[in-house]
Amino acid sequence: MRRRLVVMLKEPHPGRVKTRLGRDIGLTAAAWWFRHQTAALLRRLEDPRWDLVIAVAPDREGLASRVWPAHLPRVPQGRGDLGARMARILRAGPPGPVCIVGGDIPGITPAHVWRAFRALGDHDAVFGPAPDGGYWLVGLRRTGRIPPGLLMGVAWSTDAALAGSIESLRGLRVAQVDTLRDVDTAAGLPRGKPARA
Figure 1 (tube, one colour):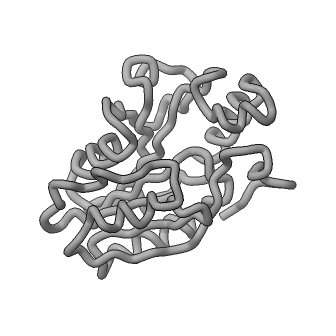
Figure 2: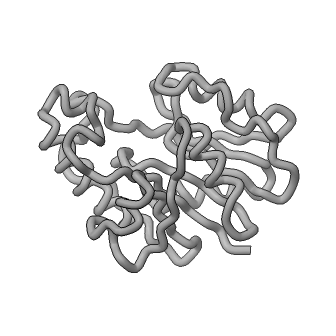
């Protein structure tokens, strides 16, 4: 069974992505940052140990977009809140472990992702926590029952997002791996060069 890494991405249009960052540096600059950050991230995360897939939004525009690398497979995120969209991705696809990350975490390296997949060797689920109470990675082993309430009822964009997500997986063995920071405001923008593997 192949491992699958899914990167959730929105089309990088001003006013559609990184709006909180846009309040600090301008909507066009925030969209520009996101586009270049995600391009570098996708290049960095291509790895023979897993299949790399992009989950795009909005669905129709994202599937036809020329922004993302044409050689990478794409799937639509679909409707619903973040939890509904991630749960759909975690349930779908071929058999085998799957991890999901976002595009706004400059520090992700293949080593971080590999640690998450290795944690799924003896756990049902894995999270990569963020310092703000959220998380940069969620993964499932997908060999047993997936809870029907997977990622439902979570208070997204709050310091309770990780705790609520773990609660939705009650009864499963959950691991946590490295803590990484996402970029929501100008204060979170990385200094210097992006992370390497």
